[in-house]
Image (cartoon, rainbow, N blue to C red; front, top):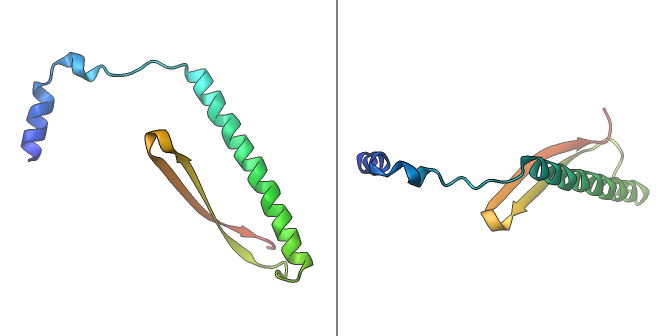
Length: 91
């Protein structure tokens, strides 16, 4: 099966490999950075708000390590990136 795949790739015309579509790298990178900045700022605000509320209501003591998880999805291209981490409330 692997041999068949390699053979089919080697026998393809060179033109079929040149399927790269041009895009403006600067616009692309700027757009990604804007999205990630908005994501980061919004997530931080919400986390701070809910942690402060948890402290005020006695649900948190202030010395916890909270598990955190975020998912970034680009539906049009089938990307689902999951990021896991921890947020410490004290040293």
